[in-house]
Amino acid sequence: MLEGAKLIGAGAATIALAGAAVGIGNVFSSLIHSVARNPSLAKQLFGYAILGFALTEAIALFALMMAFLISFVF
Amino acid sequence: MFNVFKTIGNWIGSVFNNFRRIFRKDENSLHSSSSDTTSTLSNTNATVNESLKDLSNLQENGIGGEAYKDVLDIAEIVPSPLEQFSILPLIPMKIGNLYFSFTNPSLFMLLTLSLVLLFVHFVTKKGGGNSVPNAWQSLVELIYDFVPNLVNEQIGGLSGNVKQKFFPCISVTFTFSLFRNLQGMIPYSFTVTSHFLITLGLSFSLFIGITIVGFQKNGLHFLSFSLPAGVPLPLAPFLVLLELIPHCFRALSLGIRLFANMMAGHSSVKILSGSAWTMLCMNDLFYFIGDPGPLFIVLALTGLELGVAISQAHVSTISICIYLNDATNLH
Image 1 (cartoon, rainbow over the protein chains, first blue to last red):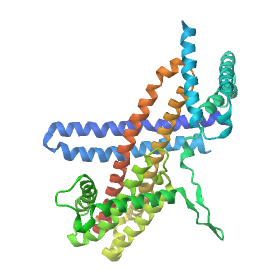
Image 2 (image 1 turned 180 degrees about the vertical axis):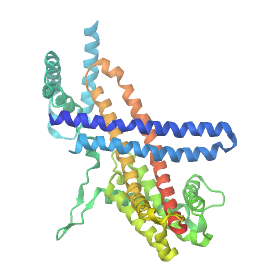
Image 3 (image 1 turned 135 degrees about the vertical axis):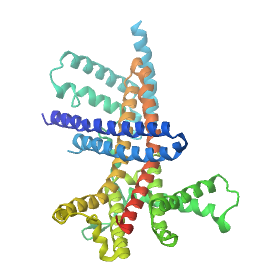
Image 4 (image 1 turned 90 degrees about the vertical axis):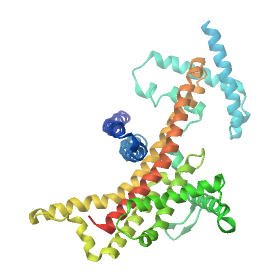
């Protein structure tokens, strides 16, 4: 019973990844938009995009961390 | 036809089992005969067939099941992917109620410290290296040049001399997280930054330092960071609260971001490589053919982790610079 509840909880914790997926998609779609408008800035914008990607991905990993904690620690 | 496949699969499996037993460390299994292993395997197959008939009980057929445990035993996989983060005292030391043991994190910290120092020492030997740098010297120059660029870009409104004062601290933080993250990617090594004790200790001490710098630079005006200019007075109490909470949360998020990236990345690599290894040890040709799938995913994930290791060092350094900028210039 507890095992099953833990698995359900860990699975539910990964729902948060939907938000992170939207965020990462948003970062790179904005990058493509901006490069299409001004290709000469491509290099600088790519740096910003990677920074934004890393920050968004960190949020996704918080959710993954919760899933790990639920399934392995408790 | 199917039997032929099955026989080939069993044969390949037993070859792998023999390899595995050669590399295995405990004496007992080294001396056990191969027929023993084969009988265990046929037992496993029998258990799998039996449990396929009765799918009613999770405890019998799921994670708690006999067959699953047998497979884990064969593949020698510890069920928890968090096993790799355990801290072991190498030289136990105990003073009163405090533990000052020399643990594996301390060992790996010392290892990276000496590595970085040796690296810098050999490149800058005899008064500053060559005017045309070789590969190692360019690498060190790349790492060194990276930080002042960040400091100059992110911290504004100060003269070069003042910025110069912050440079050593930020540079050391950058090299610390960079080399620790990268060193954690070496198989069988220990990732120091995957413990939030260490990353939080780093970020909290930096946060305290940044606050001290802010008070030094602005005096009591530093407190005005919590109230943007031109706010109507009735709103002030709420706004102070609203600004204060995110400000304190920065210290937490700086450490947790680095820790979560390292921990989650290493755990997922471990889980996927465990799945690849279990498939290899299943003694079945179809699993053997399908095995490159998880194997390539593991390879791709390792590449991603290398990228994440570098980008997280970059990101945490940028965040520190931004916080420092906020503290010195106010907004």
